[in-house]
Length: 395
Picture 1 (tube, rainbow, N blue to C red):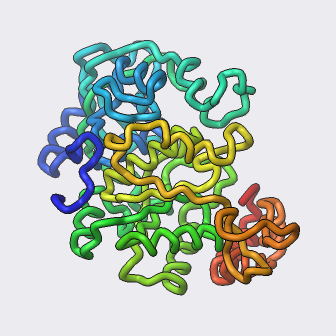
Picture 2: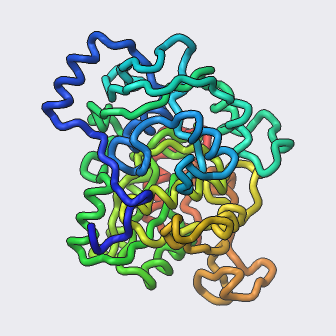
């Protein structure tokens, strides 16, 4: 790991039990209080266990919870933008207890030592989703999810028994489910000292491809790192997106300079704060440069177009440790005959090819390919097959 960027906090956490220890924990769990995890919490257990959430070794206590919300820092001073909590019902456990954490499908996922029990201030946590608390209109999916969480938080370190709780599921991708330690080993094997990462929860269209290739010009390699944890209704299923990524890489990227792995995190839709979290996570995976486009991790009109980029200017660069690559909106220009942005080509009315999400959904559902300047035909065909067979609510 010596030649790579240090993980956040300096040490790559590993809370995954050895097979022998996992067997002991499974036996112990039979006599422990059971805590049923939400889908988001289950994702968090995996992210903590594999070190993607380094330096966290478990769910946050109140000091971290308060500091993260007020200052975007852990109590020890390290940058951290979003609370990672285990909210549950009252009376589930008390300080000093050991509890068994079960995934939504009933699989034992981890055992936790409860070091602290505190009231979950959901109203306070919901404020992280807004630039101004007055913007809370009761419709933000991330804020509303927090408001509906349990009234008590359990805090303490975890030992993970089962990393991937549904290895046969459509979002398992075991061959692409690399841990931070594994991506770091692969980067070293490939001789990559600088690595750019692209975060996505959607198929990659031509503008995204342009950002990725710009990043490839300045770093040794590119990690396409789609999020496959919990997302909101209407997002394209992870298995469909993976088909799109694999096809695009095969036909349009240089294989030895490109990697595809998945990030098993849950989306919070927290806009600028989540952009910071995504950057820190990629730092733990060994990434040095993180692509931040417009409206990163946004939803609706709660954030300004480039708020997720501007927030990086407020952070301690040394502690952040990873370089944000800030890109403006890009699109295909008829006059330039290529991808352009506001930084690279003058704006001409009607020159750029832009399609709304509604228009794209309409075309796909009719079996029509969007223009090749907007998306690669091979990707369009995968989405058409999905859209026409399932008639989804949204793309």
